Image 1 (cartoon, helix red, strand yellow):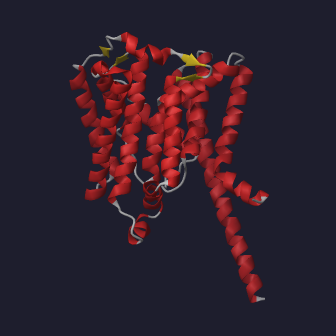
Image 2: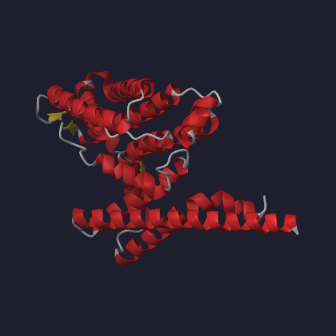
Image 3: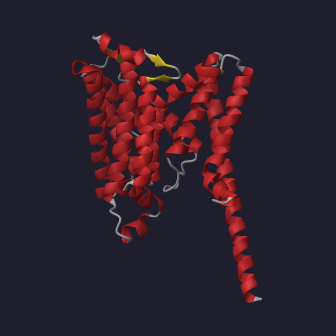
Length: 329
């Protein structure tokens, strides 16, 4: 592979990678305690909640849709995990995650089959799931009674915990699925050029159903892991998880136009967001400043991607004109 081809392959990751390096360097320089294994542990912990939600949202964005119900799904899954504690730690998390996958697949099937706008539909399911969550919890926070089953969630293995290990394994599985399976490629096709993909024989409903199943499943897994680690769940939790997950996906370079981006883009975006949150939290910074920095970084990345795309189109246009001129001479 030539240097030009290697640079072209790395181009989708250069801007978020540069932002991550600069962000980490700045925070580490002004916050001496944000260095070494402790900082890496804090950043990796972000993958277990916002990271999983961003991963699921990215699947729907790539498919040309958007799932607004992820926060409510995470809250409901947390409640389900606590209510199913008799099934054990792994069993309770698996039940909550499976319920999320099933609901997401049904939601995606209805959106694809009926041709309903996903923003409109998932506003409804956002409200519906939140109502079910309050009813299931009895309108009050609930606690895990058998704390011994959640003790492993508090263990730490160098810079990893069971939550971050589970999240990273999920990222790996998602990368393999989206990049190397037929169903994964269908998600890209239906999001990049839906009419052309359908005309070429790509099913319209299945990719959307699969994308929403991934989204709801990841959100449910995130909520279940958070409940297991905290030992409790509350029906009002995770109202802002949608914005956090969407910001992480966009920071990493997932295109809002669909059909572009991958799991590595999501991972870079989550790392940026986690570094900002963890670094500023160490300094005792208010949450409002974290949101301000996150918003500024998001605008920088989106603006940089826009400029790079415009310059790339202009360059390709000039090359095309040069070739045409050469052919006419």
